[in-house]
Image (cartoon, rainbow, N blue to C red; front, side, top):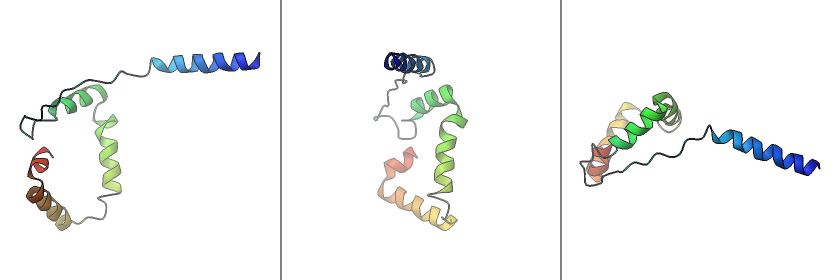
Length: 94
């Protein structure tokens, strides 16, 4: 009997979560488009659905406080120049 009750508690708990879960959005990324505009559709969907505070802000905050925390302005400039020189398409996307 206890196992049956535990089973139903788990099932109803999981069912209660389903209303909070959104289906994934579907976007098309046109890799033939100009690099500066390829990701506009995906970013628009994300920003409209979650807003900046619940999407990009946590990502930028994390990387700014860890990966980029110790970089000087000169280092940023050198990294940017290296990306533009060696990966110009990706630089344009960024």
